[in-house]
Image (cartoon, rainbow, N blue to C red; front, side, top):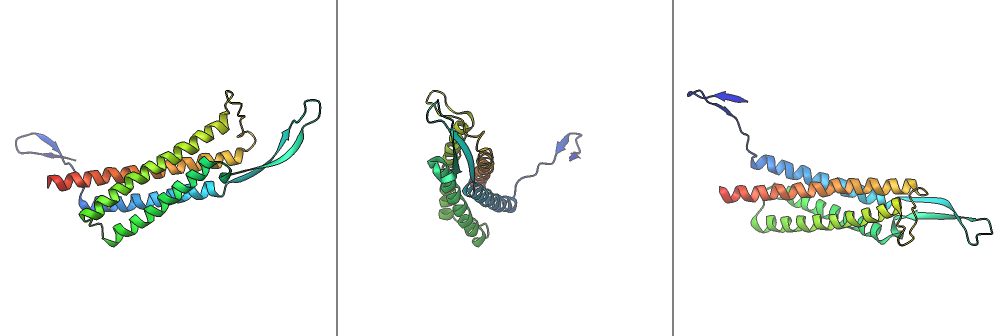
Length: 193
């Protein structure tokens, strides 16, 4: 929106984030972070698929068909992913309650504690996402150097659930990142006013 000054210059109205808009954004981002990390943990936590895999014992004999089940807790990286998202969800719920209980008015100690914990949770989520993604890529592509075969062509449903959980968790980590940006803006605003 442009306004005309008396001397003929055009200027644009600039809207500055108010404390109330930052608090509402903080609450919405915290709620989104809780919902997304919960969805990621549940999506991978309930994932399970059984497939019939032909196993060749001796090359002169026909392969033996063996039922094999892929579960999230069979891989330590997936277990770590579920645990990190569960912790992030729990922390997000507690921090949301604290922010609501204080009506968005953060005291120095509470604000500092929440910022430090937000940083730790973001780092924890990033490490969980990285671990699950690395195992997922190996499952999708295999690794010929160490003779690990692809498994996603056999366990397609399971691999798609892993991919969905990682994508949702990545969105949850972005919500935590935006929370840190808001906290930094809030601290900057307090220092200049």
